[in-house]
Length: 460
Image 1 (tube, one colour):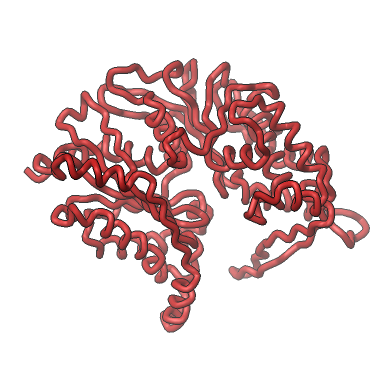
Image 2 (cartoon, rainbow, N blue to C red):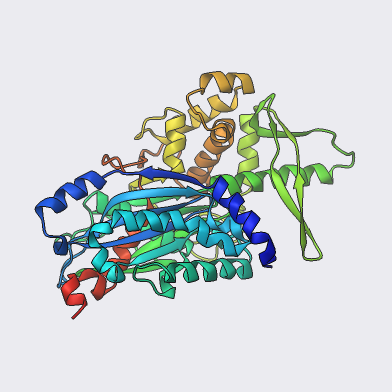
């Protein structure tokens, strides 16, 4: 339900006061230097906003256009980026404030693309929301999207309603797969695109986890069709909502609380095996009654129990759900066999590996050893040994996150305990974090003749 408009002025001041903005000028200078030596009209430009669960981020792009979209593949280059918090999903109760949260991103695009101001009306701006928005009530989600579209229509850039939407989990996964393989040079018009010439992608966010790859054998379900230049192919893509690193912690806490409520004698203290001794874990929940939600907080004492943590997390995967096809991962979801496929694990997969000081190409057995170690530490030991991790949430959740990732990869997706087919990487050596947004822009440009073509042709 939308709140009274009378409350908006004070809320707007609160939003603007809490808005966090961080710039990321990775290759902006290089792009500007290149443009000094080449005519501006030899490039096309655009932007895409990643409306994530914890914040929004805009990427500015440029690309070399082509008149032969059926024969060539256009790979855009991200030239600059800016992040803000909070995410648009946090405005569910006050959707009218969404525009204010996106304004710094649009202002950034106007500044970064000022040199092509005369072509702004032909310069696209996209917004794709992810799992945080998929978790919302449908009415809340549509109210936010309505405000987003109203705001973006007022910008000087090319925009129509379909350019702002909630990406499906499968789309988000495929876009991440495109990002990885494009940056590795695997997506080319003169090269076959198949299981031998590409790598799979593993993405872990706050609310969902994605697995995408080209299997060695046929895909029976969840096949995503792709058309890039001369290539037509399918990839397997599946997204598990509620299996992101934050949502999974809440699901495990649900089990701890539910078991306590089922005991004959009331429990005065709740113990959580995935957190350190001397640390109190206090997840926030909401209790719904008569269309109203009431916040509830539960306090749990950490017990530094790796084996107990392992058992608890495995229970969240519902492996007992019937599999109605030849092979499933968990929750009865079909997944082709992995065989010896290679994968890049990015986002929080890579961040956790870095926190644990696990080598990027280490077998999963080393991830297991590191998880056991961090789960054996008390709160004091954790704070001293891992003081380099400045984010308190990440440091205090290390045991849970590490164990969850190990269980997800082995028990969930089916990688062998000694598998060395996963490379944990936050970037591919170019300084840019691996992000699905780059793949999203690759997809959009290569499906649209007007975006792929030189501007003079698009205007003809």
